[in-house]
Length: 354
Image (cartoon, rainbow, N blue to C red; front, top):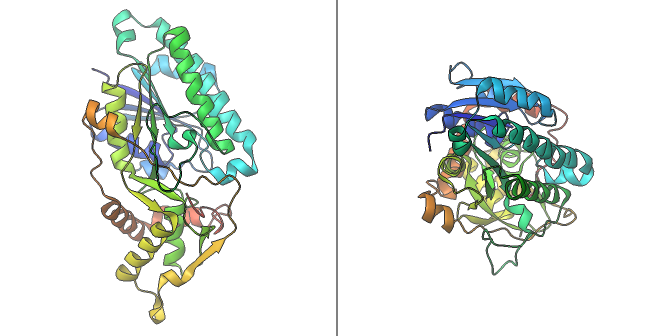
């Protein structure tokens, strides 16, 4: 594929900003379209913001006419759609925003993409891709001791968040089957790494542990997630949009299943080694078990065999190496997380587990 100009929706978010940094560093022209909600942060793009290969447009994906105008002006060759509300706890408390962004927003974006694609010359139409980036949570959950998600696993979402993402997946496939829009899809496991918004489990635990605050864990911490380092995910996304087969979906996982409690304990132990608490205390003593949330999925596990076999992708980071890099980044980059941490929405209750 000769795709070089890519529009990334949600490029100021955690995964989106990692993708933008990766694509610019790999020689692509990147157009970042982001509404800049609470989790969008242009500071995450400081390394590429001055590059002539990068541009930013503040826009809601629900603005169909605005999106179409940007596609035309920027001569976009592919769309990588990551813009989404993504926090399960927030979806339980306020599902309407998830319906609006994840379902209606994707619908509006698909309409704009289809109108733009139909205007292209035949060769440009052949190259064009709409890459929809989704989650393993659309598959529901698995027993603790068996099973794994493949691309053929039936959808069984448990939360308003996962239901909204499942709906958006179906709309993307429908626009391919009905209108011929050339789409590819990917479903990823739990990401972690630098620039992760501090309401999520890994950054919340790192920062609370640094400050000697309670480390909230849902239930008994037995829920299992497959953990994927965000830069490994960005490499996978590039392969899917440039080499993935039209109409196909690809599961992306790190082959690193851990219980939520195990993740928290690992972070505690690494921080105890790197930056011991005063008085010789151990950070595991800060772990606080809180009431489990409704519909909390037991276990996610991704079979990444298809993307490994067909596109040659492999996760480069183990959980141990990736979490060490992540902790080192937070230790070295207080400039990024401190202003977020001081906002009212960075409460200690958020992020209590996967």
